[in-house]
Amino acid sequence: TGDVCFHYYAGYGGGRKSVLPGVAGEETIKANHAMLLHPNARTGVLDGNPVHEDMVEAARMAKVDFILNVVLNSKGEIVRAFAGGMEQAFYEGVKLVDEMYRIPVDRRADIVVVSPGGYPADVNLFQAYKGVDSALEVVKRGGVIILAAECPEGHGNQVFYDWMVKFKDLKAVEREIRRNFVLGGHKAYYLMKALQKAQIILVSAMPDYYAVNVFRLKTARTVNEALNEAFKIVGENAKVWVMPYGNFTLPEVKASE
Picture 1 (cartoon, rainbow, N blue to C red):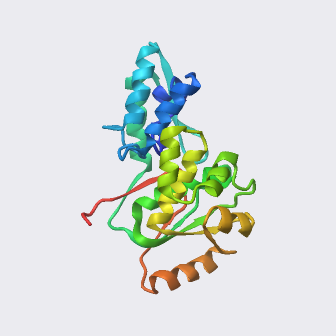
Picture 2 (picture 1 turned 135 degrees about the vertical axis):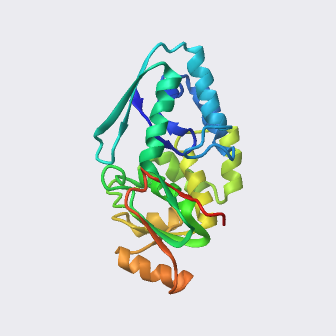
Picture 3 (picture 1 turned 90 degrees about the horizontal axis):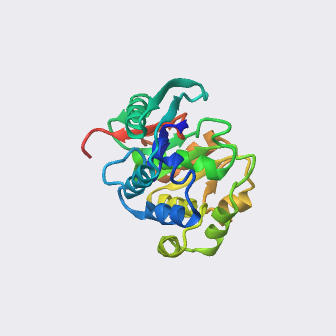
C-alpha cells in the first residue's frame, strides 16, 4: 500500500517504494539513495532515473503479487485508488498525479513565492524544503525564492542540521553521499544546490540564528517584507510566480528559454 505523489529523487512515491526502501536492508537503501546525485534522479522523471530503476528491480526480485495505491488531493483526501499488478497500478497512479499536479508555465520568474501548502507540509524546514525544490524549476538563475513556511518544529532533522554545520560546500557533501549516505544528509545537499541557483528568504517561526547561520537563508518577518527585499535584489520590474501548494505541484516551463 502507499500513495503515488511526486518525489524529488525517485521521481514519484508509491508502487515499488513499498519494497525499496519500505522493507529493504540499510545497506540496500544507502546504495539506492546515493544515486540521487544522478542528473535524472529528480521530481517527475522515471525514464533513465537510476533510483527508480533500482527500486523497480528490487520490487521485481521480491515478486510483489498485488498493490493498492492511492492518489490524494492537497487536503489528504483520496481522489482515486489503483490496485493490481505492481507496475501497472503504479503507472496508472503516475498518470493521475501528472494530470492533477503538473502545472505548465510560460517562462521562469525573477521571484517565486512558495508555500509548502500549510500544515503538516511546513511542520519543519526538512519537510518544507520540498516547496523550494519545486520552485527551483521556475525561478531564474540569480533570482529569489520566498519560502513562507511556519516550521513550528524548527529544522526537523538532526543529520540535516549536522551536515549544514559540517560541510561548507556542495562538493564536500557529494563526496560524503558517495562515501556514506545518511538519510537526512541529502537535504543538506539539495539546499546547498538550491542556494547556488537562487537566494532564499524564509518567512517562518524559526529563530534567525538557525535560519541564517546554519541553513544559510535570508529571513523576513512577513511575506510583504520578503517581497520588498526580493524586489531590491532583482529589480522593481520583476516577474513573480506564486505557488500556494509547493510540496504537491510541479511547475514546468513550456516555452523554450
